[in-house]
Every structure is written in structure tokens, then in C-alpha cells.
Length: 153
Image 1: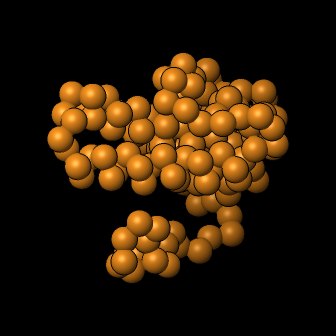
Image 2: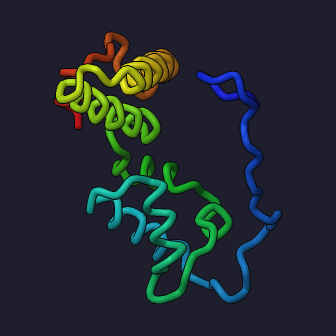
């Protein structure tokens, strides 16, 4: 797939090995995994960081290589079921954080034209994502602005 803001092709990515069931050595109870996911979400971690922590630290000392194989649900689905899902989708939040950082850099360095272009591209991506999420994850009248991004973050 081609990149959005360059004329180059995208780089290939490695795939996870195909698996239908969790490995034998990771026999953690589904309820324990869900409790740990909710606990990590309450500490303020995003769904991707929760997956990394479960992979590295595990539950009760046993690593969980794949939450979906172990529980039958994705991390975000577990968070939705327990009303612990974040107010903004993770990809939108990450782009807003990037835009705020770029804007702060622009205020300090007004002559940085590469940064100006990066900010324009990031804001364009944010607007596209807001259109995608509007109505489902976001309010119907939600619009992106720098002030609103600073306030939400």
C-alpha cells in the first residue's frame, strides 16, 4: 500500500504466525486476563500498551502472547464491555498529541518549514479520522482545532 503523503511505496511488514489457539505454556484464566486489562486501563494505559504489558509482564507471572486467542475478545472489546474504554480512539489521540507537539515547535521555531509541512499533513490525517469516527466514537458536531486538542489531552 502506498504512503499517504509521499510518492513512495509502503514498506513490507512482518506478520504474526497463524495460530488458532493459545500456546500450551500460557494457560491463564480468561477472567484474570480481563481483570488485568481493566486494571491497566484504569492506570491510564492505552490498548496497545496494555497488550505489550500483558505480553511482557503477563498475568500472575505468566505471559499472555495474544489476548484475542486467550479470551476470544480484543483488548478494546474487553474495555468496552467493562466501560473502561478511552474517550478518544487511540489512533486519533496519538495524532492529536503529535499535532500539539508540532504546533508548540512551530511557535518556538517559525522558520522550520519541514515542521510546518508535517503539521499540515498531521492535521489533514486528523480531519479524515474525525470524519470517519464522527457519530460512532465522537459526537456529531465534533470538529478538530488546536485548542480542543490541548483541552482533550
